[in-house]
Length: 171
Image 1: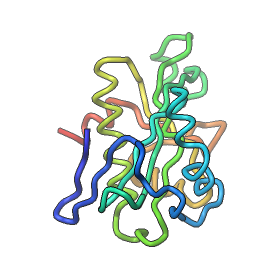
Image 2: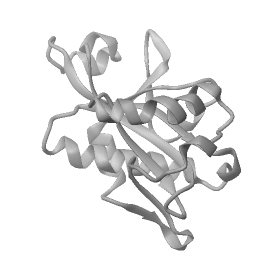
Image 3: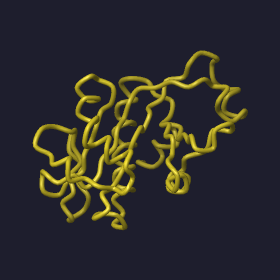
């Protein structure tokens, strides 16, 4: 499934052969190294679904990963936790997300996030997922908070967006 942004022509699709991952640079070595060296292996082994954004079918302008995950209800704020069972709650982990330095400032991070939430929402209708969880990197926390994510009480860098909240974004 491909996603497009307006007339600018950006496309987001699953990672496959033919993308120039080696040229990707977002300015965070951990994320650069991941797309260069690990993303393909994680996808092949079923550890992460990797999606890349490109405008020319080759150059990676951004990427994100999605994985199945679970949390314990007691990790959530008390008002939410009291309504949930005490067994592990299925969630989707937005594991990594980055935009190339050459494409930063164009709103493409938001495009990647909306695409990830849309894919997660559709998948949750087939395989249950209560929320999207992200472990925000330094400087990214405010981005996720601005888009409706809430912090885990004991881990302020770990954020979540309930699937019901995500559904409202697409109504």
